[in-house]
Length: 209
Image (cartoon, rainbow, N blue to C red; front, side):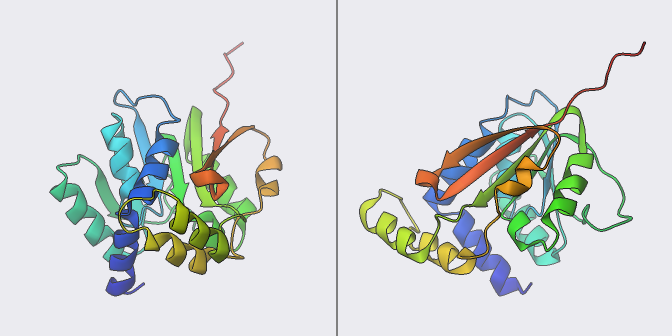
């Protein structure tokens, strides 16, 4: 991805509606109290920083060095303790990382094999932990974005919703992929249903017999 594209994504993450819906998603998880959070495909690092603000030892990883560069700069500007590294846990044979909470926002829709990606993400969750997925739904159409922008109180950079809809219309995640998991899954609708958060609860270890 080019530096310009990374800057555009950072601009979108700075929109009030975008930051608010991701903050709401992060707040569905309990306060961290020093537990670990791994944000996969972190981009400019919004979710990573929000998790750090909730008390997690939060790390973001992304394949793109432009994204990591911007994420580090934004974290420094906000005095956030979140850290960022270039990496990819979805690649076969990649070094295994584990955390109490693993998140992936606006990532699953662009991955070809979504079931395999979910399996890899779940492997990164420690027993008893949670996986948080945040993605636009099929309701995020250009028409719906224009309507909400016209009538909704979206705050600054509201035009970013239309840009997001243009980029994601027809490329959303089929919710059925979550029903195939052998774990408890909770769905939370965000931004009037245009976005959803899925929380996958990973069972803890069985007691020794």
